Amino acid sequence: MSKKKSSAEANNQLMGVVAIIVVAVFVVGVIIIFAKSLFSGVEPEVPLGLDTATVTNAGAADTPAPAAKDDDSSEKDKKETKATEASKETTTTKAEEQKTLTVQYYAYLRVTPEPEGEAIICMSPGIVVNVLSDPDENGYIQASFDNNGTMLSGWVHTDYLA
Figure 1 (cartoon, helix red, strand yellow):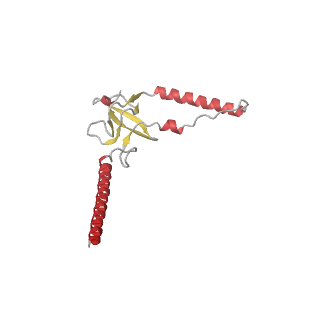
Figure 2 (spheres, helix red, strand yellow; figure 1 turned 90 degrees about the vertical axis):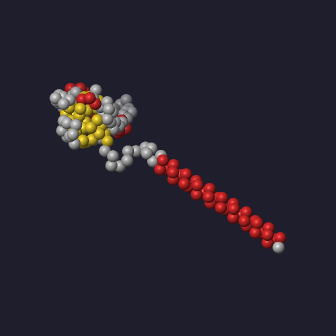
Figure 3 (spheres, helix red, strand yellow; figure 1 turned 45 degrees about the horizontal axis):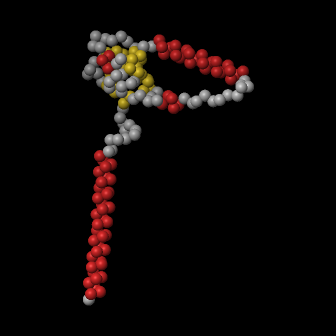
């Protein structure tokens, strides 16, 4: 009889340990699920479907570094280099002629120059816009900017620009 009692006690202890382990695993799982839902807003990428204009440094990543050349480069390479430098100077001159302003606060680019006008996109601070017109009587200017390769134009209030 004592062997049966000690065996039953050992089984009860084993069942108790197993129950504690199961409860611990369950609690850890609940904590992980809670933490994921609590910190779900901390995403490294913009969620799909969110239409914002943000400043990116994509141009720097897309521009390849110049390759090192040997001292005995051909005449053709020298001509191509001069042509490239000339086109860069022309591009810079054209960009300097166009007046630009920078978005200082989140601002809507609108279809019409009025607060009730349909919003095209919300521009983030730091966006550089090209000024296309003088301010109207309500303080709106017509502006355009490059939104990741797509030129967008509309109206923005001058209070948001500097």
